[in-house]
Amino acid sequence: MQYGICHLSIIPVRSTPDEVAEMVTQLLFGEHFKVLESRKNWSRIKTLFDKCEGWIMNNQLVFIPEDEFNTLKECKEVKLAAELITYVEDEHKILTPILIGSSIPNTPSLPLSFDGIITSEKQSKDNIVRTALLYLNSPEVKGGRTPFGIDAAGFAQMVYKINGYKLLRTAERQSTQGDALSFVEESEAGDLAFFDNSSGSIDHVGIIMENNYVIHVHGKVRIDRLDHTGIFNNDLRTYTHQLRVIKKVI
Image 1 (cartoon, rainbow, N blue to C red):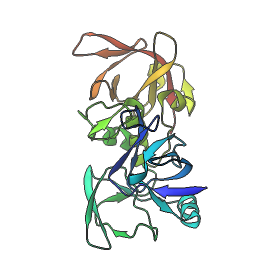
Image 2: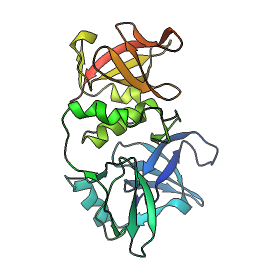
Image 3: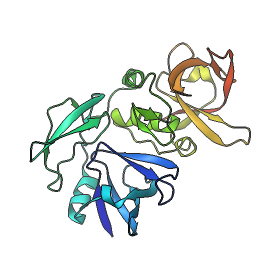
Image 4: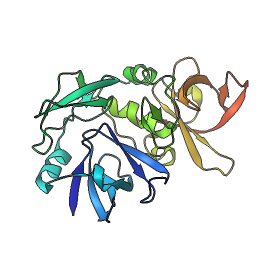
């Protein structure tokens, strides 16, 4: 088994070993992973953070020894970048831009210095919505996890990650986490609302705000109304998502 770490701002992870294949997720700086399979130009990986699998290009792959991977795996206090964009500096004084939610690892394979704002502890539930608002108007990009392109599940995952909590990568998998609530009225700001499609599959998630609003990704990160039916789009004046379940994860 081989192991790697993301040494770039972001690395796209694709469904198949092809540059035009669907992007299933992104690695952010400092995130580490197992290498499950290697080919001439591509490697199939499994991320440690959310167990997501996919293919990355070998020219974007940096290996780390197993002992370093295990040290990162066992680390209880992960430092995360808390600003929308900042920089790390390597031993050659070269700057690399990193995005909010990126990890700041302490590993010999990636020596660096960082003077930005970090978060390393679990935050209160009150901070969930404040973090979510940092992404407002970020464009929707399937597989994205950054303020410059993000999908619904990636948005929920990153907001929770920045506050010290782990969510899985897709809305369907996230819906298996936490405790279900019976009514919208029982929810609190920071809880998660899940929505299903016409086939009954959960394919969307949003973060509940106060006063029956929800912040979610639909074209962009936006705020709409939420009720027992689902999401009412204020611009289109119609419902766009059908409510399936509300979960309290924190």
